[in-house]
Image (cartoon, rainbow, N blue to C red):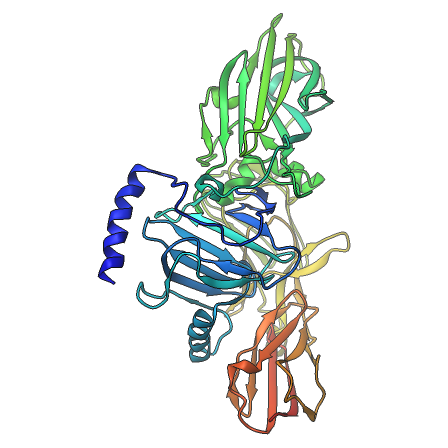
Length: 561
């Protein structure tokens, strides 16, 4: 152990001199690295914090420790990363492996003991540096599809000693890529009522003209005033058709760089501010992420560099200017976009007055809105900008603007339920209406005396709803009275069409047993290699409860030698 600590201290000194060691880490898999997702790729409300490595559409590939170290964290959750393993290395970095099928036998034994002690499938533990020591190349886990993954793959990260994720490719992990990034959309944004693009004060969808060399041009613009641009761009590697994120975007105005967006590192504290990088309302309405190549007020992202005029350009009358965007992937493949702008001083005729409502939200102040039984509380800096908000209540329905404005933090919706009977209160909840059919989606609801409340980061339409239907439970791979001696596991399917599953509990012969919940196929699975079934005749009991307290019980008998 003393040798390990000494190595740790010496390597930390090296780490401070060499930020990204090239030969220290090996690959986490023993197959060619093909990516389904790149680092800092734009995802819903966050930047992707690692590489999504394809596992040939199967689970169970061996996952290796990329360097010496120790398991410093194990987290198992129904959603998110699913089964995840964190290994801290002597050079100060931590590697992360997520969506795992299972861990190595030693780690599996360790974590199952913790799960049985806590009586919970979901668990998070932080082993000390002496408990689970890893040698470079050790098999530490097997790839899977747990958590919120949409298919089998390994989510892999490298974090620095400040817990900031860094692009793993900076450490020498190689991916074959000779393909240039692609641009699918370019928009121009007139800023202020006196600015225009082609005579309009509205943002303009510009026609892309692909060039034979893979670059793009735009037809000459006529514009005036302050202008910003936004693009939709992706990168593709040679061995995959996935639409991945790019590595760097740099913009130039008349030959001078005026903005750089560098996607090599970020902090988890800022990842939620992705919605300030993209045109959020455009994404909500058209499902296309436009990356704004200008920096608006209250944008805390650290991705920017070489900034002049926050990336905006200023167009004057009777001038000719050139705007250029250079999009680069990690391997240096480069795509250029050229826009020629001719200055023409004219007032746009389509300037619209700001829509004024009864309620104005000052982004740096608290605000409270109240009508009938509903109350909405916005905290300071809930929003990036100040704006007039739509607020309307009709009986049990709250209309709270369109969900096209990004939020920095959650706000609270409360509903006074004092006029409801006590026996009805457990089945009431606050729901947000989503989709074309306005489906009531459960919003985590708490009750304090005669008030229901929910915290949410979504504007839109909310209603008071009731769920009176209990979850369903049924056996999948066995029947009552079955002999399961040769079975590796038993499985039941659970479902709740209303508010969703809140918790479950399973016992065999009255003793708690571990059952893994897979929300994607709605199953609970108990593996017999846990060695908790020791009797021939066994009684299984499963209790499942939804989010408003409706509960179902399933009981059956099985035999096993």
